[in-house]
Length: 182
Image 1 (tube, rainbow, N blue to C red):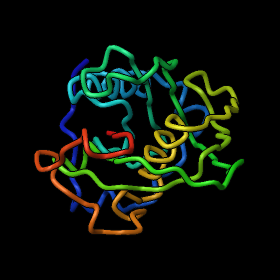
Image 2 (image 1 turned 180 degrees about the vertical axis):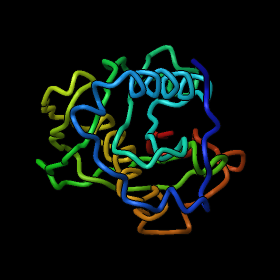
Image 3 (image 1 turned 180 degrees about the horizontal axis):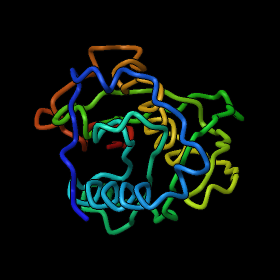
Image 4 (image 1 turned 45 degrees about the vertical axis):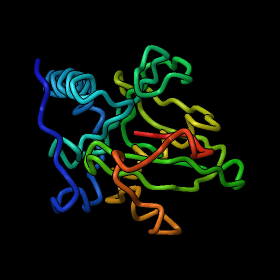
């Protein structure tokens, strides 16, 4: 398939609550093609997660894959590839952790965001089978960041201190204590 252009903050679709998929829709050939496009788009953009609304599809679908080979995240460990339809999040540990988050829909900017440290995500996989996963630390933040797109939220909405919003090319990451997410 092919990479699709990622829409940017300001596009009203990014502020919509996305519609759930039916089981029939998940199993359809069209959704299989959409998944291929999403993986291609994610790879082309050099990201670690992408939600369907970011490519103009207001449906509850996100893909996530962390790779230790990432130039942008040299200390990151590999994860499995996650395909997430119709997720429900439960917070398991409310202790907040902070990371410098970026977003493919908010290019060139980063902001410090604190989120719960450990969550459970109940969802349907690409075969429309129910799954549940518990994630913590950096991966929990990635899941929360991507799944926020399905409820019309961007990381900038989660920032407690807007003065931490900055352009990436002005940041000196060696002086920052926290991780960077995009």
